[in-house]
Length: 139
Image 1 (cartoon, helix red, strand yellow):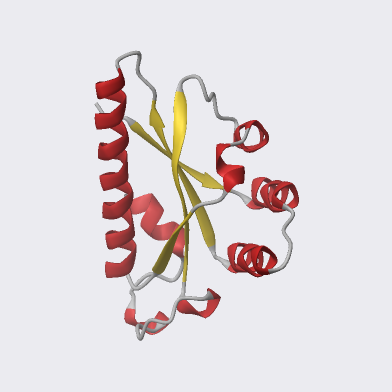
Image 2 (cartoon, one colour):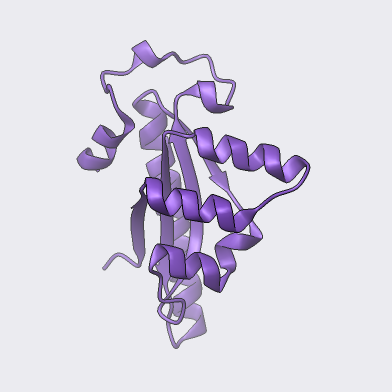
């Protein structure tokens, strides 16, 4: 059994999340970076009535995120695991269609090529993929 759920957020959900996040000062710069990423992957972990099971599921889900990010890197894409208070809010859950009684947010992973903020030496041409969505289809 896989306790995680991977959800790729589309343009409408992304716009609603950015509007809900607002942002002032440095946070505004961070949100601009979010907006420029080619893709957003939301990862959740299922909740459990048994605390130790929920902790194990959350840890397993974190490893799944790490594996995803490693796979993206191997395909020539860059990733960023982001955190924001909004990700734990009822408003975010509503935008993303989450049932916070059944699952909790593990990560929001931004992905794309280095032009959106990560300073890595890899170039777009180093990957056989032409679109980050292709890797998601493979996974």
